[in-house]
Image 1 (spheres, rainbow, N blue to C red):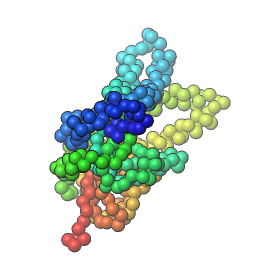
Image 2 (image 1 turned 135 degrees about the vertical axis):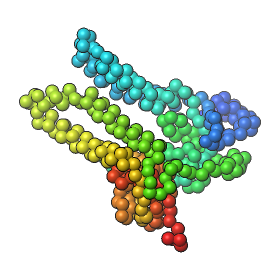
Image 3 (image 1 turned 90 degrees about the vertical axis):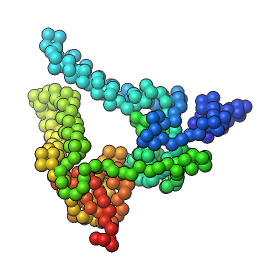
Image 4 (image 1 turned 120 degrees about the horizontal axis):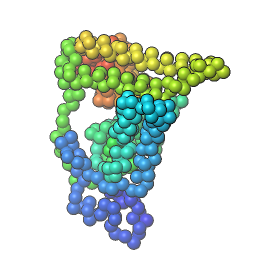
Length: 348
């Protein structure tokens, strides 16, 4: 028994073609073309039973997470007092648990995508309790969490055939791309220049897109605090009012208050930057990334000589080089970096 080189499904020895994707006949007739930002749909194939089961289990957790406060609302609120507000909260929880449930979207879609892309970088980050998170960054497909074996064996700048689930960014397989026609197609693709922060041309005002990013952060903070209140509000009140468990209630409240104040401080700084609307500029030397306080795939904490720790985006993470000087365009209070431009030493 062998594995299909196209979709990795097992093929019996007495079978000449893959039942799932039709390899090698289908592979010869339909070349796998890498998707570009202009592509309508990437090459796909049906999920296996194992892949469906994985997404089913993962999709259950957000649904169960939302089910707890919903049960609490129906238990604590009597039918007579069940007004519009509790109803809206229940509906909001159901919508959030389904809309933001990426594994549920992949399960409903029930296909995996197979594309060829160039591997730019692999790195490891540190999660909670010292856990290690291995990440791989591809040129067009972006970031994927990988296991240690892939981290240790992949070759940078090489082209790989990547099998993945689109919404959850679950990576199923990576394999060196051996199809020369596909490689030629990838290399001949016209590259689209990167311009992540339109409107940043020096010291000036925040663009509309940058203001939207700040608004999204503020809204997420408000939603997070509402969820904390729904989940833990009544529990903490009972602990504080119960003399036997008052000390536990004080400890829990102190921890939540500490988290709240840290998050609230960042939100206040973002609100100030939003109101002032200023984008400042400075030239600074990049030192390194703080891999213990970065959120891979979302934002990265970079350390500069003068500015100290600032928040940068994934594209900046891929471009920054230790010891090099860069011109940074950033918001003063929240220290969000909007754009990074390398300084040419000859012209500096």
